[in-house]
Length: 174
Image 1 (spheres, rainbow, N blue to C red):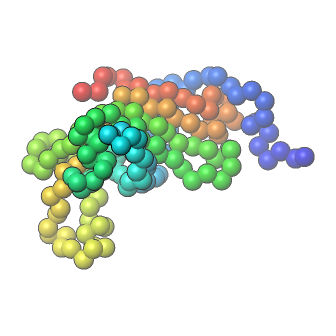
Image 2 (image 1 turned 90 degrees about the vertical axis):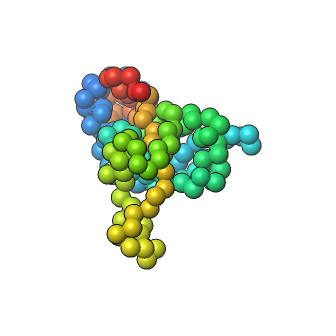
Image 3 (image 1 turned 30 degrees about the horizontal axis):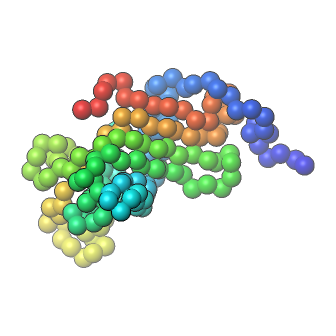
C-alpha cells in the first residue's frame, strides 16, 4: 500500500523545538483559530464548553454570562484547561494545544480590562445582533494566562521533531 506521508510511520522523533520556534507555532495556531473548548470543574463535576476566543500573546480571552455554569465553576475553582485545535483531516494534519492556567475575571474600567479589551473583537457580534457600534458591551472579560501549554503537531515529525512539545513562559505568570 502506498503511504501518503511515509514520515509518519515508525517511532516518533524526540527532538525538542527551541522556545522561540515553539512559541511562534503556538501563536500561529491561536491566531488561525477562534474556537476552543474550556474545561472547568464544579460541584456537578467536569464541564467542557465550546467558546469563541480571542488572544493577546498567549493569553486566551473570552466573555460569558456571570450566571453560566462555567462562570459559576470558575468562581469556585479558577483552574482551567483549554483545548484549541485545527480541523483534522488525517494524522498528518493533527495540530492543537492544551493550555493550563487560572482564569481571572476582569471588570470594565480596570487597567488590565482595558489592555485586554483592545484585543477582544466585539464589533462583529454587535453588528450581527443589530446593536450600535457606539455602544460597546460592558461584560466582564475572562483572561487565562497559561502556565503550561502542550502543543501537538504531527507535521513536526517530517522535520525530525517530536510531535508533542511542552511550553512554559520564560517568566512566571502573575
